[in-house]
Image (cartoon, rainbow, N blue to C red):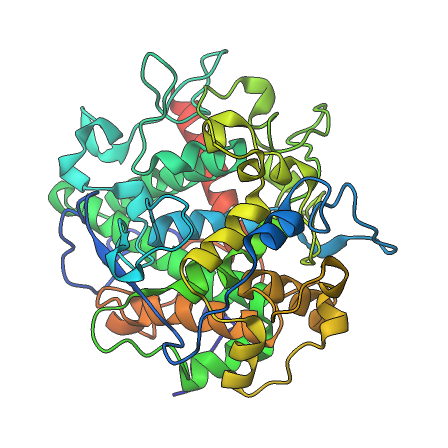
Length: 479
């Protein structure tokens, strides 16, 4: 089935005329949602390629590859060309937001894990569970006097530009990981604002108070799903592959009933974004460029001087982003190779401070296949040994899937997007979990189009962030 990808259906008028009855702008034809999944939900992980043999790597070589000073450390590795991508700096951060919404693996690092015992403590649906958590079962997220609305927190000048926090500065959110660094925290806040803005719009259009929360939740979730499929994924996997997937569906990700999250996605291909993190960010006018860790570490209140101006991170309507992501290649910036203790905790080996080591070790522990094996399985030519650049380490095995995905993007797509293996895994799984959700817009009403205003032919994340900013301005005008 062919599905239009341009999102060009025009929006209706913002307000109905006198005496004119019109449907609420953000009303969605969908069955009522439940109050949300419990935060103790135990979903399933599984295999995308169950018949492929696991790659067994030498543990010492994994440490050598990913530790500080190794070839994955951008500070010490040689790179003769620039490493700045064309895409905005915020896209890997939005990718992390999606990851927190659909996956939560609490299993510790280990030499070998039993995949059958690993549970996903998120529903495998793109349903903003990280915002809503258990709904009415988590009343501390909502305004006691108006429970259809989320609460905000106040910063050091009394402005509502932070997440709500307890007396020790810990964020009160549906997923504590959404406070791990400044950008994810502020992005979470933007989605809270967008929900509250939809509540206001629905009330203006006459939706009853006993329905307005569910309607707003449904509307913001469908906008979010639209952004994933029509703004995020075309940038990450390529417009051609995404067009084919929307038309023909996945070839390999075909869960029998309830969607699951493949290990090849969660613990390899979707960790491509680690390679796109910049060495330093400017968060707003007048701020200095600083690394994301430790300078923009979360788990603490956000002062006014650190409130993010999204035009520095994303393309907003009429305003191209002022910073761009790093290319996807076989290197991580040093701040991710030397993660601080508040992120990783006190660990038994110094190498565990390296996100690269952690990514490689998870693939080893879960018995993931090599990148070359997956390439052969999907029918594409694998990278040559010279392209993976592992021989200098004495590496004789094939390539760990996570590292392969990074090098494939570098060698096949100039680092601007994922290559055939990484793109196929990421595109199929994210489309599949949306199509496997009986409450998604693609299942309930495939003709639905975003109702929020957009500046160009298609609605995108920049439009949602601009809407959230407009909600803040309107709320400030009423205070």
